[in-house]
Length: 287
Image (cartoon, rainbow, N blue to C red):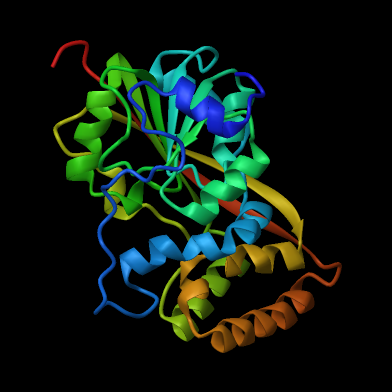
């Protein structure tokens, strides 16, 4: 990849892509009657206003994830034409690029895309969604969804992935999931459920089960990171559950959480423990 401005790189590098900053239809229209922090469309849009916080506070992924991805996909990342869908601010995109993949990002949100272009100016990005990829058919070796596939309709996004993948290409999905085997994390999630009627653990749920009879490989990897308490709280606050609640309720919860965690971690450093849930499906050589 070159260090050309993102606007130039986007137009030149994506087969069949629209002009940069042209949003590709496919995102469900906002529902004027929907409300509350549990409405999926509102949740998906909530990250744009918190893109900087998301980029700073959210965890990345361990190197072992990319090792497992290469093994399951049956190909190295280096030199692979890779499409990172729902790329957000580029947390996973950066890892893929640094591993040698030739990456194009697809992101629907204006705020997230703006942050992405600031962080990764040399990586092409087009606005679009997984349900209607703005890419030519048979143009990619690998399509990835890091922490984003659950925002799609699998009955649309999987056929779209198969259309864009070359024969033998792979679709890879993964999520960081809070490790509830760790007592303090399980207790925190219980408080979130009690006080905010939701969860930030990140479990993929049914999204990990791909339609269409595809053969898939599932892997679970454990890892952790040690972070200052303030960064941990910012990570929590970057989840849609907090972003869409009354700001006073979210702030009050985080203030209470700070006091509880300082009792448990008096040095002000917490160890966030995760499992990475990885699913890889390889496109058949023939339809």
